[in-house]
Length: 239
Image 1: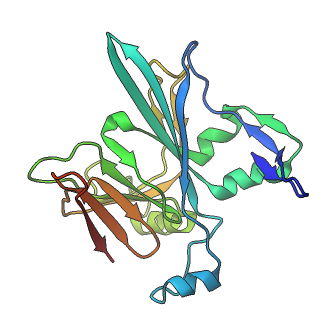
Image 2: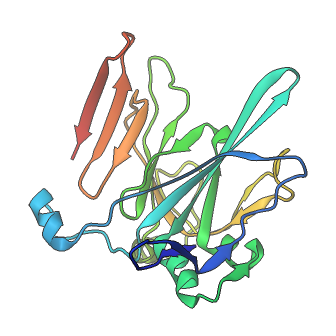
């Protein structure tokens, strides 16, 4: 975590180091990507939209990090991708402490992140506020796939838990609250399995869609499909 220093020649000042899960010997990461929603001021927001009387709480917005690993297995090029969500406020908390301290993964990561493995068939899109959408890597021909939305806003999680009265969610539920820890298998890349437990609400659409990618913000969900012809793109907006 770095802070941009002031001066005629701005630089980067390291505030702290947050260590990620350890990798197997000889494994290197070929992709590191961070995606997050732009935080806008209320004035800028109302110039953009007059429909909503609110904006996402900056302290509850999430970032999505994606790590990619490439190996050659049996003569074939193999790419494994994993992603995790973390609230901006969690990262800022450690940055505010300063001191250029190093925090091992087990001391900060499991409780404030939630990981997903692309090998399960779903990939995350860029978050919008505290929400993120998952879209399928392969579209089921003729039927499409449901849209899966995860909301990491702590207040919405508390309200959903109160409505459920402590009843545990089942895998078949279209609306569920996930508070228990999840596990990403270490595979050939990581030294240990990855445990994460950032709570979230999950909603799965009843209708199925044939979108290739999903975009999301405070107001709407945008589904994007690519046509058979090169360069043909269809955009569907759901308010």
